[in-house]
Image 1 (tube, rainbow, N blue to C red):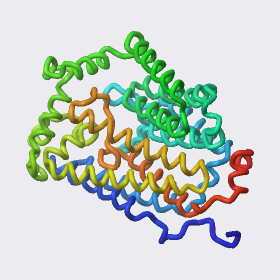
Image 2: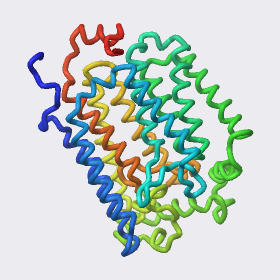
Image 3: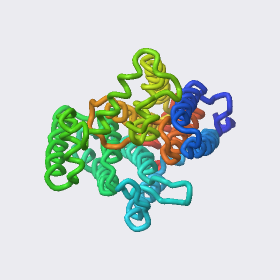
Amino acid sequence: MAGESLIPSTWRTDWIAFGCAFTLSVLGLLTMDSFEAQNPYFVRQIIWLCIAVGIFFLARRFDWRILRRTNIAVALYGLATALLILLFVLGHVSRGAQSWFSFGAFSFEPAELANLALIVVLAKYFSRRHVEIGNLRHIIVSGAYALILAIAVALQPNFGGAIIVVAIWFSMVLVSGLSRKHLLAVIAIGVLAFAGLWTFGFHAYQRERILAFIHPLASSQGVGYQAYQATIAVGSGELLGKGIGYGTQSTLRFLPEYQTDFMFAAFAEEWGFLGVVLLFILYGVLFFRLLAASSRGATNFETLFTLGVLFYLAAHFVLHVGINMGLLPVTGTTIPFMSYGGSHLVIEFLALGIVDGMRGYARAAHREELDKEFSGGYDR
């Protein structure tokens, strides 16, 4: 109504979704802290979690209809692209990847912001053109937005991050109404692109990781060592797990990067099958809440944005768990809310806060709202 506040009220907070995300973060902290007495990752992650939660509650109080404007969406996308390019000049190199801006004890990874910017741009693009998605031109144009970011991320090199970018684009194209023939065309292009990357784009270690995925036991002491140790950690947890602080694979450092790339394996070893079931339930409830929120979007933009956030989190989850269980090649990805890292944690809670803010004005859209959306009334 005209006299109704545009700012969401506190009671409208989706406490179930927030509770799932916060609980996952706490489980990550418990798993992260169990390996050594003096753990800098644990202390820093507590600070990042406090910041991320604060950002969530600030974000949910904002009127995010501003994101429907083309100039805002393009500016956000341009900022993310510029930061990715600037990485090659000012970025900090760690573990062979130039993916972070370093600020002393803390760092910032622009690839996470790029994912959110891509969701905004694609939600804006498809919200006005979903009835025309049968036109191949729109698939190509939207694909170009994703391709620019994917290439910039892959060159860091961060192949796992590039996969997330492509997964977000592909998922949002699918829900926008991609035809069967265009779907086959996209898959064919993807196969050709992979063949080209294999021949000209992948580094030698990336090709070795993919080969190790196909023949894991042939390189369990070489490039396949990480994946092999991760599967041992997951299997050794059995039903009830070894207990917090008693995960031998992580405690004895057989499992590398336990706090980031192999958080799920470390968690499974200590919490066991029942802990993993709890973890899957928490993610399942969170994803369901996002799906439900998308169905109540005020306009197509809110619906597509919320679905984009769902795909962003789900892609990270599926890729991370698949890698940790030996079902996918090792690419180095975090698991949402649990893995160490401030950049992804802040962006994930920010995304949830934006979705929660959109719920505040979600109601049956009036005809004039739909007319504005398709006529460009939100482009100003």
